Image (cartoon, rainbow, N blue to C red; front, side, top):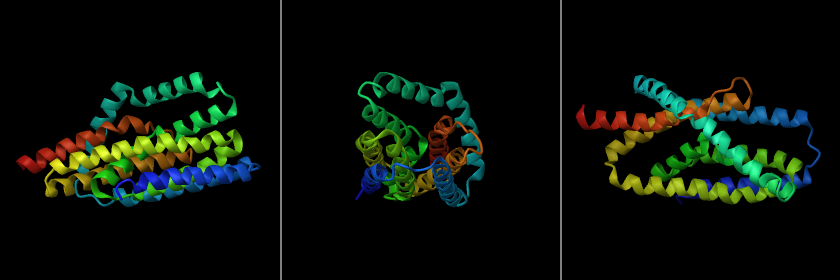
Amino acid sequence: MILLGSVVNSLAIIGGSLLGTILRNISEQTKDTVTKGIGLGVIALGLQMAIKTDSFTLIIISLCLGAMVGEGLKIEAGMNRFGLFLQKHFAKTNGNFAEGFVTSTLIFVIGSMGIIGAIQSGVSGDHQTLYTKAVMDGFMAIMLTASLGLGVLFSSLPVFIYQALITLLASVLVSYVPHTLLTILMAGISQIGGLLIVAIGLNIMKLTKIRVSNFLPSLVILVLFLTLKYLYF
């Protein structure tokens, strides 16, 4: 099932939200420890994906060029401004419900892990990244619901729609790509995606602050490099 990863992700948010209504007295210390545990798991997944590479030079070049493009376009800043816009116009309109819905939607949607995972689901049927994101989002939903209420539960809908659209688009585009090239591209996307997921894990653990979204153009650049290499070399 091509949308299985997105379905599991949404169900995890719903389940976490329901648990959050029961576990309302979670201490800040517990939240911090659980969050760092999520970060460790995300880093482990990213490393597992990243080390399976035989095109490391192209990946580094793509990361550097992608970072330059992303910084020039200010992708991360733009996503943050969009989030603040939504929060300003909707979060306080209907009390905690709206605030919980908007805040959790921003946390679950705005980021590179959902994009990478959705592409993998659509191209190869590999849902591992979205499964990991589902675990992460589920635990985050518990904490957010304990603080902001049941509005968090309804963020599962925009998360599903957003990731499902990316997955379906990727599945359509893949039919126009030769099988050998597709294998090469998926390996490259997985490897560079793994490095970005490591960066997300480091951010979750608050060990650093990497503007991960500004690296997203590196995925496109690597696809172009690998396609040219396949066609002409």
